[in-house]
Image (tube, rainbow, N blue to C red; front, side, top):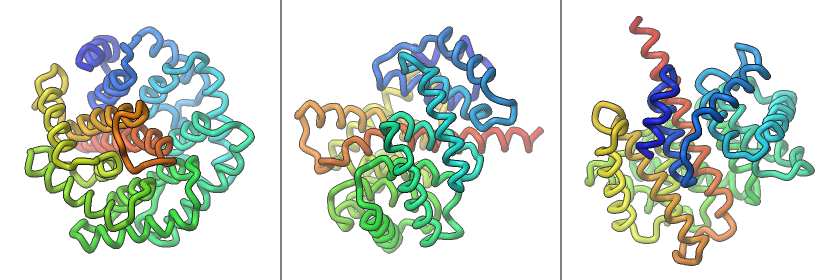
Length: 322
């Protein structure tokens, strides 16, 4: 991962650190080395295909180029994404920094013949979010609506689970807000009872804090992913702490380069990926069953949404200080 980051730092001076760190991590998860020239090729392609005001540019440009870079034929996936992006807009979703990721999620995970039904499901999930939490639900929830839409979960039953998770987590001490809503969306993917999932999330949050790996509220979706794959809370927290300490000592990921909560999020993503791999190989028994595909999708997309938000906040802070 550190070698990937060094490559990115050398070739992409103007990109934000957190974006380069995320790209380095996603390549490490896929056991791939960053290919700077291929990234440059795809970035040039995206710029050629879009206007300077496009939401496929800005904070999304580098990360989208990275995702497309994993494809043998990135142009085909790009065309599918553009087609879906326009269909999502026509179905009522607004232009924003999160809609390209929603379009990518559907294009990547759903057969073409099922795109329309996935958009209907995405609208259904988002409408339910808006109905239950009008002032909380915003464009960043497009990503979670897309994640839920591409699953095979029942819409009405899942929306009820989301609301039950939200209310129970709040009663357990989690503050109401958009980030708690995001945590509820992720927990709804799991097959355990609402009680079990929510209490597990609380225990993991407290254990991480005790071990110096506190997740801030903007990373609560990551807490949801940890909760879904954890079979032994003490072990998974110890694993995250071990990876956290390892990352801390890597160039580009230490004290001056990355905040504690982002480092914890990265460490948790790496550990969750390892657990999912073991589950798929039959080496680990996790109660996720048919939700495995949705959880794999959520692992990447939820982290990417958090990075988009963090990067936008950093850019805003930088602009206001100038």
